[in-house]
Image: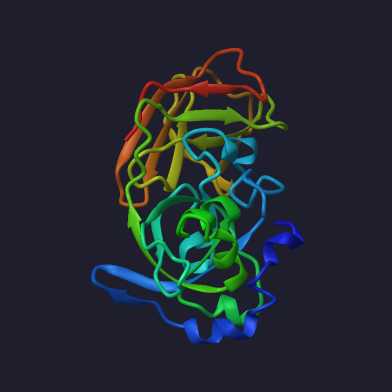
Length: 254
């Protein structure tokens, strides 16, 4: 992430010390939040999850967040949905907003020591403010928030598989996008035509890869396991004659 992502968090790193532990508040957990990027878009770069331009499009629509280690989970938390609301500042509206984990949050050791932390894009951070109070909330920098893990509800969308640049007849890397429910994945497998299931390796957050000792045999099916253990098969989703930089949409979702 660009240096702009350090807005407020690094400048106020010492203030992170009072947020070292999340605690339950009427079913919610309490932690801290900062913001990055003043604009209404998705910030710079593609994020540590690899979503790239997808972050500005539905269903994410730039309502996204970078997350600390306990939520990012070395990339396994990519795609998970959370409701976040602020209550500890006069500018807070108190209404929760839903955000998607699309990046890893950078910062100093003090911030990293928190049990959980959200570094929201400006659009999502502003959405937590009372009408006309967004500037005042941003000026606060590091604020108290309450958060809760919620299911992703991507109605009308099926899971998409974008074949990444660099894929070739012996190597396949795919960005997996738009998973409803848990939103994040714990394992991904592929099955070549006439073959058995084989584990793929996580390459970058939501990007998974498979190295073959010989040419891959399409069509290729992909089996997903969500973080709660739910399995789903996208049968023959990578067709014969597949190409890099193309997206293939399944007809399934959680």
